[in-house]
Length: 228
Image 1 (cartoon, rainbow, N blue to C red):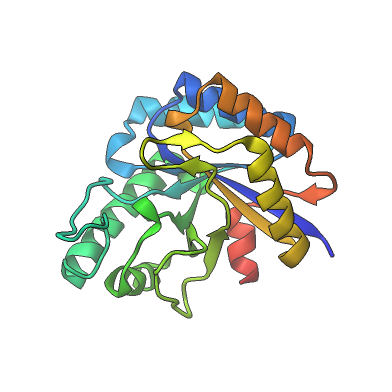
Image 2 (image 1 turned 180 degrees about the horizontal axis):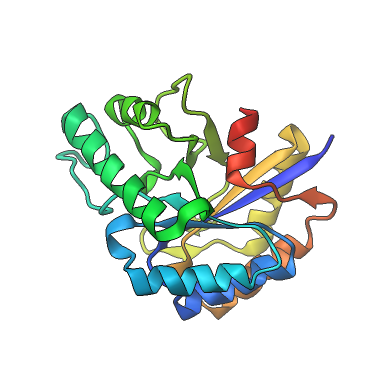
């Protein structure tokens, strides 16, 4: 059984030093780089910097749509940008504007995979993604996002961050055991990263973890979505 791993980077705005550090880790390990970009936060100069960096990269680099504004619209305790409190039309308009912005900024590097903030999306959002021709949606495996026959899911199986009481990375050997267990069970693992909270120790931990994953393949999200 071919074992595959996808690593996802959320909250991308520009080529920050932290993003560059994680990008280099992925390149050293031969892993595809997935940039979950927030459309309203990516300016033309930011996009040009990211594109120039991507052109120098020895691994595949693609861009995903990480929400639209990455703001919470939910009145409940759980944060949503695309839940069912707002109308279908409001959500479709936001998704379309974000999609069009990333097409303009990144061209073919934008793979039309949607990454909802906080890994949450409601039925209105899923329907809008289908109508707008998105290639898929990437969410954590425990997400409540409903299935849609036209929007394949690219699941993330591991979040290495313990969020409460404060955001901090779990021991990397613990995360490695989780990833290896998932690979052994299903042949696939997805790791979602939040590069803005990753310090040098976290970058080194990720580098060590990926170095322990022998004989794995690193497909792109678009490739995984196309296979269903």
